[in-house]
Image (tube, helix red, strand yellow):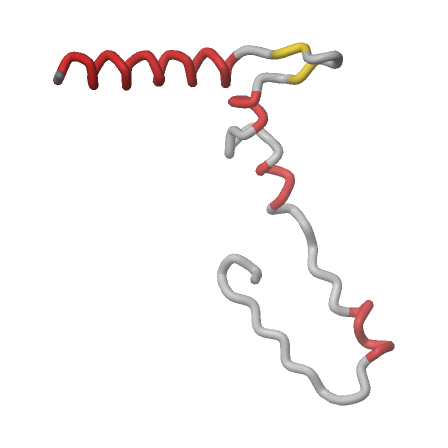
Length: 74
């Protein structure tokens, strides 16, 4: 029974590595999802570069507002 669990988890790991590191073509080519979801080279690298523009809200406000951001700018 131990070898069945080991073999199943090993096959799932190999299948996941194969799926994430290969490009697929379902009518139009899809890049490898592993590279797309990579936090150092994928689309996540572009999400942290957004600048916050507080001046756009000034024209619509009627009273004083205090905005507090945490370390993740939320």
